[in-house]
Image (cartoon, rainbow over all chains, first blue to last red; front, side, top):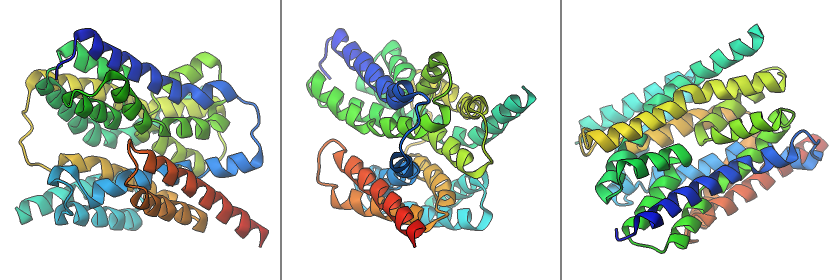
Length: 109
Length: 232
């Protein structure tokens, strides 16, 4: 990369400040003013609306394989969903999913 | 008081497994950023001031391509627009806290802390805002310092991580572990499906805007499903 040091710091400080303002936005402005019921009804779905979309491309087209579907990652994702439904425990699911990921990685290499 | 502290501890326990994800992710950022030519202060500046892995990687990738500063900022901030949605979702829970406390929570608002806290707020009986903040800070206690430490280790120790390991996939695994328990009503399932389909349909849009459109559609779909089921 061919930036001056101050360009790099401009990116770091700009991204840091911008990200912080996004995080503070509603939390800082709205405070405890009551929100209308329809707004709350939409906000209830924030997590399930953002996160599946965030990880879908990572599962189907991982950058590490150049965007090609990969049996190791796809298998680990399905196993993670299965373990979650079976154990209903977040910690066990993360460890179980990671174990399946590495097991498939070394089995299929 | 005891109650607030037990919420903090419960949060910390919920945050511990994220170390599995945060540590390799932060270390990889430290390695890649150093190899790209950033000095230690700059690498650590990213992890202290931004604390958002995906956006940091996007910024780094575009810096390697020598994109103009404003374009780098626009693209990486677009990746973080979801933080505003998280902020709005937290406001009903934490809005009655003092501004300084809300400002502190905002600093440690990342995907993992938000997901763990919103799952907890939905599953447990109503808590005070102070207890909810204690839980949130509890979750972030193992998450945020490990992010700093792992970035530093990656930058200083270099690629001690053996190449070829699928550690990039730690992130989807954690998110799956958090999302699946949230799918406890038809409306939540509808929202998740719309999110998945939407992100694939709008994948052609630049700067991650497809994810934002998909997320907005999914929120509307979830809320509308809930309203119709309640009306029946």
